[in-house]
Length: 337
Image (cartoon, rainbow, N blue to C red; front, side, top):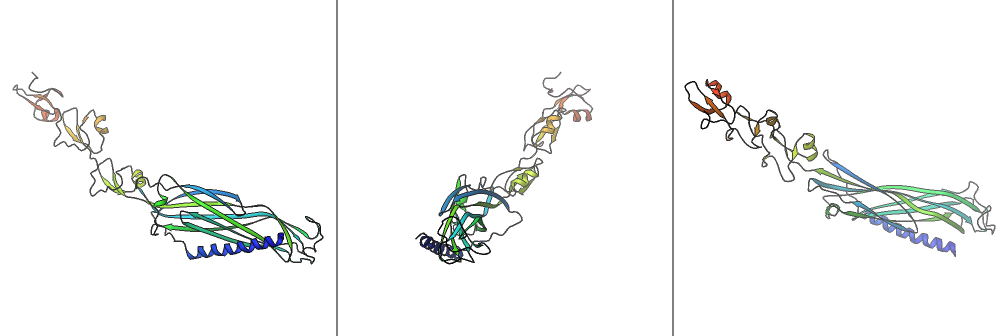
């Protein structure tokens, strides 16, 4: 009865395997085309669970588009699985089994938000070179018994969903997580005998699920300290020493801050070449702010006195070039004697 149940279960499992394989063939995976500017984010998690059959859920972080600065192009799921067990087989037939062998067939399926990946693996493990004897009626030992020991099979496969997929990739974008559901099964059948007892222990599956997000950065206005602008991605902008202005901006329409006017201690005005005013302050000047101009800035002057007793408010260079004596920054002819 035990053998009949084993063979019946194995046959039903083979029917399930064929059905799953047909589904996998009916829905071929898309192929992502790598581009020079594509970037990747790789997430990987291990799994390990007993088979009878068995299943497990894995949680993967959603893709962070950083406020629209990164655009998801494709999602790839790589599945690696190993099905393993310790198996012994005992010949229950009155006939010898000179070509005793053990067939292992296993499957693993992963579903990550309708990205379905299926692995079917099968192999035959040979028994002893001289086979085994007819049943001796003593279970668990003797010349009719063979320990196949620890056996395992490994398989890999991959599936990809791209932006052109009708369902899109929106479900993968956000600050939460997505679930990868794993479902595995397997079975054993002895060949070379018509009656047998098999004992399977440590029957399970393990491996990894790898999720790869392929994306590209969005270009936007990148402003530099000299007021210049280039449309760059955030990493390229930072590497060039610029400040990224955000999604939706571009140099054609965005106004980057421009270096402003610097009022110097001698009363002159200097148009700076770098925003922020650091060079102005280091020269003892008074920075009028970004986007200001010497053409409109009101820099303080000083009283310029001439030998004839006349006075005019001027910068130090202008006063000296006119032959006057400059009275210092902040003085004026209205109050200076």
